[in-house]
Length: 569
Image (cartoon, rainbow, N blue to C red; front, side):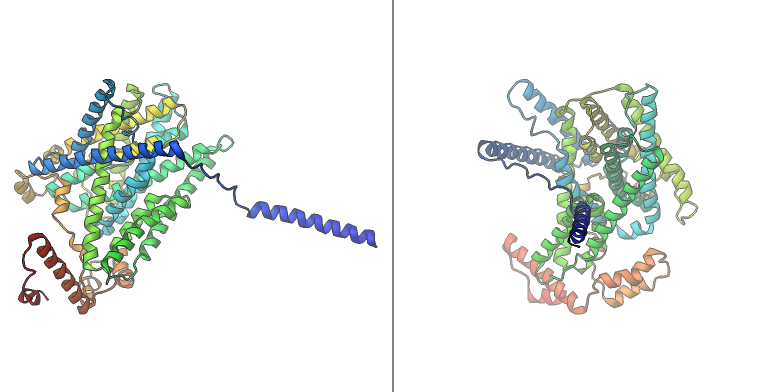
């Protein structure tokens, strides 16, 4: 009996050990990441000095670019888009630094290097968030179906055409040979459009607002989609896919993309919906909380392996559509102007370093590879725009005309995102990375300088602008994005609608359909605080007090009479 009991106990213990081992294997997380060594002593001092010089160099470049933009505005050189001017200035500065280094007067190689991590962590999030936050929601949501089709399916089409073309041309020994995943990664990153110069021209010439929104809306969503597609290709490159069939690889990539896209969008939307905390009595705290929620979804999404750019874009759109109208008037104006200023500085810094990059990195140039890539980029853009536009016209009341299609195709400029993504790719050997980086820089500069510079003559030629605007703007073409943004405050971002006014303006409108009707009927009333007469009264007193205080401190004048205040109230 004792032996039997012992055998039973041993069997039970063995079963428990097996179960515990299996459970531990399933439950325990992956091994903890090693803690990076902390720099101390001389190394820490050297790193601090290097970081200080990098910060100084970046701020110096930014200050020179701001002075350049000021001179463009002061001397009314409105025909030159600021992005083109800043890139050109960056090229000149890079050449000047190269001459200084050749004469051994200074060595700024480390400082002028464009760091992809700095771009994705510090420079890109404010640009993307401001794009979503300042978006004209009416035109955007009315064209949301078309914008989504162009930005998601159109970008995927362009990525497959460019990537597939590069792969098969490489297999035919026509150009430099890349494998399938590297070709798709390059096709994805080069499909990110950035029509900054084109949008400035659209605004100056007052082209069709639907065309303006289709190009602008596609560009901000397209950036996020392109980044997700590139990350998908990188994920496939890191994994061992030798034993997986092509169909399984496609399904795995599709699943990864859908998880990144919808998971990040849902995270950003949820963060935007819960971002309001009633701090209207203390605008400084209210503004601080808005800044925190502006960056919060980016950090959270990146921390859980989603797309921070996609999350912060949707968060910006949702916070602008709902949360912004719950803020005090002071914070509303402060948010709008602060975001514009920060986004301008980040964009300027990115375009300047894009010009500097011509001289700051070792390059590998192959004429055939560059020419075929430009051809494939233009062809991929055409296959994206024209067939999808004809398809959408079956469902749109406001048709996309052939002239609009041509302008949309021509306005597919490339910007800093493709360049930063090309540096972020971990391609081996090093010559492959240099080839991708060099080709990306050439394509970006070609589209900005050639296509961006040719947009205005093209619009004039095909006569797509409004006739009245044409006569008005014939002698006064203003392509300064900074000057226009500094002189205006978006009216839809200063909401002071009471419950009765909101119902008269939105609820009872008969032309609202689909999501616009559902949003006006249910979502907007739930997530947006309607103002009472007391709220209006308090907001106007607050604005009047700040204005009077400004006059007192700056102009050393009287703060205004009581009659003026009573008249305002």
